[in-house]
Length: 518
Image 1 (cartoon, rainbow, N blue to C red):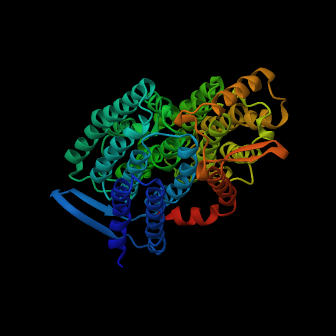
Image 2 (cartoon, rainbow, N blue to C red; image 1 turned 90 degrees about the horizontal axis):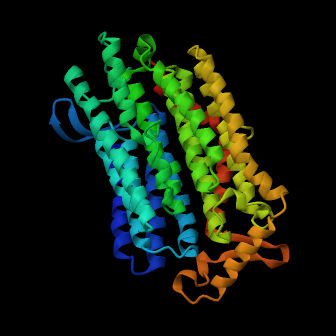
Image 3 (spheres, helix red, strand yellow; image 1 turned 180 degrees about the vertical axis):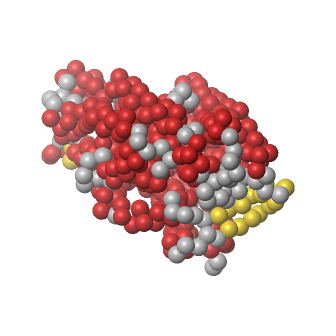
């Protein structure tokens, strides 16, 4: 099979799977089997393309050309391959996790959940393979729309409000800023094709470039750069597997991936560096890193704390692009990978804690590490990767980001990265420390023991004892009460991935190197 055909099949497979999920929705085991098989096939198709790109080839397919320089085109290149690989692999792991979470938490509308999840993965892979800005924009919007039903999954007023904020901010920024920037670009240079070194190499004025670049960066609302970040905390009303999709698998990664693509292939590092038009955005990203970290420290709700942590971490990637150096760009690209594994581990753990203990607040977690040791060991691993300590993958991306900022002469931003790591310790590492080394709060324990007793005698379907894949892992002799086994398997895989990335960062660096070499 040719690389071009494989490329198209990798994007089509999740859509075919979505149809299968819809048709088999009447039988949960069959529906989830279709989900897993589709996820495995999709990843296998994407994986076969890595050697092609590693060899230096860049296969391309044009489906439709509307006007000269405006077409629906897909092209393989290293940065897109990394994003597609993350999305397709983590879809497998998230599907395993969802099997335990959705059943263990007795979620309604599960067929709808799996259907739109598959559509979102297809859109994410299409974004990864986009050969120009028009193609990226179309599937960027498809991703936004397909994830809206997932954000509003619960159907509550809070979920609907969160969905309105989510859709409102992302659609408004993309139409008002990003589309305007694309039209301006087409008028100026006659194309929206991604080109190594950028499109603006004919001495365009710094003033025009500055305004245009700002339209692009703020038009990509999924990057959650302040002040267009509120959609991300608002979306935390969604089930935990959706939070994982938003924060690690597709949505925010599509945002920061798009920022790097625009930086590299629409404007070009040399143009940005020589004109200095990205400097102010580098400091906006630095401010977002610190402010979001400080806000995270004030949040007692665990998912809200992790949401603001994600806002901070996304701006690491934006910062890497904005300093406009090769090392900064490499650090930003690598952080997409490292953050994906570290943050999805933390969200998986948050969901496991809720399913197994019904606790959602950080203040309720004292002593819980003894009851849920696997969950909190993995939470510790994810936390250490986010902080950037060895032997976790997050160390390397932060290292290259700091080198890139220093290479550009932005020593203040080097300080921002160091301060951020200290703040990560303050609002993340404190959670497993309290879980393992603090005594349980008697009032909290009594509250949740009463909650468990009430549900034990409740015959309502929502509180019926979970069975099969949704059954909790319990060992009374050791006082262990963990989330369902599929949840623990998924958490353990992503935590192990965070460790493995420390040792395999070199191959990732080498694979990505062509994006910054002439």
